[in-house]
Length: 262
Length: 249
Image 1 (cartoon, chains in turn yellow, green):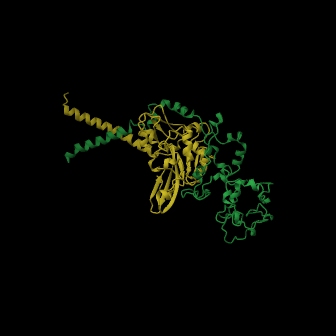
Image 2 (cartoon, rainbow over the protein chains, first blue to last red; image 1 turned 30 degrees about the vertical axis):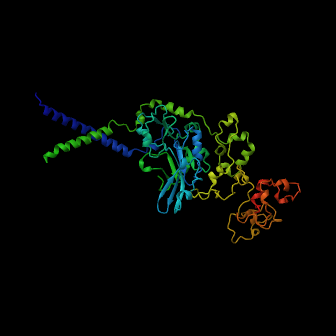
């Protein structure tokens, strides 16, 4: 039977289009439905092991910077303030609803040398407080998704760990992280970030920053332990996460976080 | 309207192709398929094998028993030894002394009065407190309150007569606390327990050219070169004289 080219293309095109619609629509609907009903990735317990969480109590931080220093010494972090796996920010909220943020040298020397009065002059200050930050070890981490070589792995306990052998130093993950937790290690030429001191925590210890904090502003533990510090604090306090609207499902929780914190 | 069929069909097919490409072959997380996911276990092991630098305060008690016990019993017990003295891992191997700067810097870093600090955290205006002297002149770094008389924790208005509530011998079962020393020869409670501007009123002053001397050289226990210490000063180290006795101009 002689089929003209036009006929062929027309019939063929319609078949393909029809077939694609028949296949695509249920697939799309299916993935939309499963995305909507999916429980938070954070609450899916991986096996029976411990599930780690980190809590920062903003009522207690005094901005001494000992955490920043301890992290650096514990983890052989490259010198320089730009290489900070954790850091402390100072927030100043004025009566005019202006929010000023600074973090001199990531807070490693504290803030006693950086008096607000000297730095900001005569401001009508409503509130001022410190916000320690670190990698949030997200359950839905953008850094894992964007890595072109898959150089991140989430441990069974929930810690997101960089695969130093696989990382090619493209820095895409640094752009992807909304918290600024990742940075380029100029010594190793790959990316570095907080590891929740995996060498300590996987052997029964706590991260160095938690160990040295004199006021208990940093807390680390297993959320599945109902009587543990983490579960207790989460039950008894109002909790929030940084940039919660981004859907990263952060494993770091904050107590008493002001609305101006970004 | 027939002329719209082709552009609409084109648009629809583009939309359908996008939906297919986005949902069918794209994995939820690359992590699950990851190009090098075979090295995940190895990665965890590499991270877990790093040595610890901060080893905790308990090992310090093995050799530094007296400092450890003093530290544990006082306000700085919340501050780990390594916090000020640095990580101790190497010290346990080679016993090289851990250096610590005795200057004001370390103390000021935590205790300077900053508006951003929680109000109830102990902080002082370090530009005024103690002048240029090192904080450890008066404060024992392991037990910071030792030798420092308690400051009156309530306003003085309406409480002019201290002995109305605080007596030296009558037992009080509840607060306020009993006075832990005799009241003989002490008429002015505020000379030691008052706010900074009242302290030292009515007490003998230290001549300014003697400030750097050890007070016990002349006022020492048993020595009567000038005047021995009154009995109620028993047990007080020379480092605490300046807490109450002001320096004369």
